Length: 524
Length: 42
Image 1: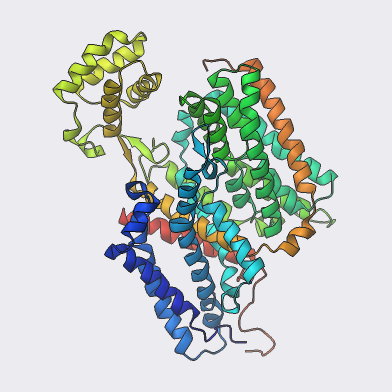
Image 2: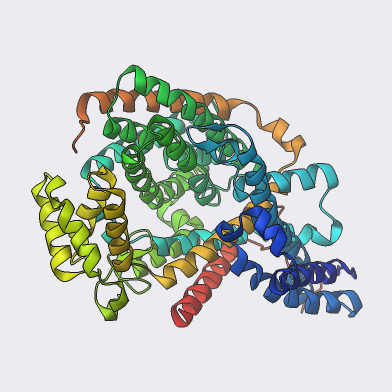
């Protein structure tokens, strides 16, 4: 069978990509970009590079597919997937660059809740919209014949993205996280995963469904679901049900958590710890924290520490699920060598994730103490520019306000800053950021401190590049994933995930509330 | 070459590759190529 279709589709997709690039590069798109946010529009650099590269590839291969002669071969089989892959990619481009920003613009015209517009509160970002776009295409318009083979490479994109995700972690990051968050998250993540797996076995749902649901409900929502799906061989419908359950529960929590927090008169640290533990999805953790304390960021900061800790548990959970799934799937065979089965079926991409995590921990991609892709450096060799040294009038301004500061550590850090005209250590940087957040000093003085902070915090370029790659691989994979979700198959999945999700989510929220009220105080 | 052996595999409904292991190694290879390119270029 010859797989390559003699169709102009890929060639046309290439022309569309090149047209996007040309319109952006020549300035024809400028008025529309102004409408989408002007200087705040984040994707201009992508618009003037990515569609050019992929447009050229699509036009060249598209012309060969359209006009060339094809015969049965490996090359014919694999190259025939390019058209579908580019079809997914062009949809991901349109969603990320135009549709999601347009929805944000429209959403901003409507009402806001706790300072957040509806699209932001509901987490309607390009990832969610991309999945929905894929679902609409497959259910309303059907995937074209020439694209069918390519839709099946979307999982390859997700696996590659998960492997590269390993570069965003480092062992040094753990030092920046509080002991309490590690204990609480460790307990509740492992507890949630164990509870879902236990309930799944009792309710006879497929192991793949139980596995992916446990990661989604236990770790960090959509990312964990996507990362664990290949390990337990989850079907698109199971992934869709898990993501649906997480998002539904998360949106509910976002409204209910602040009400309960006010009822119990919880402090900022308490509420942040509770939201970061009890709410499943990152966007909604931030939403609830901001809804609870819209005029400050103390709650948000605590919630984010817990949220990041939860994401860091992901490799452990994926490993656990890999071993669990292999054992469960082979349990019907009487004489089975678990070691051999694990060796034969263990997902290599998980090892790839660990490999890149290990490489990242050595500091090969960024200084070993990088945190969220940023690292501290106050020498020229580390990226500090002499022009960023504090000016005489800045120092005079800070000097005049020193009397407002009560805490000794803050006074000492500020004194070192004024003496050296730059922040001298990562500890001083943390202390001074705390001073800014406490709003003790005037707005002008805080502005000086913020400039001093930015001068010593540098984004590692390699980490930034990895983030871009991961973003696009996930965008590509998730749009393709959406194209594998048909309404017919959704109907067959049943309502068990929602029931398990509600029970586990409710248990986690209540237990974490009790733990927070009993053991967490305003100072950790 | 025997005629009964297919010249290529058709994969599954979810993947163009014949096995998950094959897809994993392909993902690992692509990730390492990207990692190497990032390491060299940035």
